[in-house]
Length: 150
Image (cartoon, rainbow, N blue to C red; front, side, top):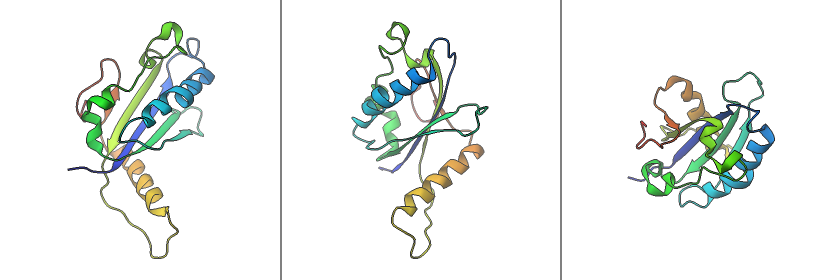
């Protein structure tokens, strides 16, 4: 059954001598996000940077997903991960530590008379808050894991 959800992707640069934050940001904004948005299940992306500079993974991308079963698809596995922006055109996984997780919604709450759009924000925040209480994750790396529990 098709289930809308969220792809949560947190990352950090492993070695800023190899790839600078500016290069990583350029790859993310100008290469990776456009590649992700070409897929059939992801039509928008939200990028954030943690306000705490000592955070484990300071970069966060959130993608509303039309069907969380997308994680098991060939289309998802074929999202490009190499770029000429990286030394030798190599994979992002050589330069960044990435942790990606797909979340199915559990329940939505909205107070009566809430402004339009607040339902999505509420569900997003609820799902992010449960992140710290879940051990289920899909660690992105080479080779790509198969299935949700990677």
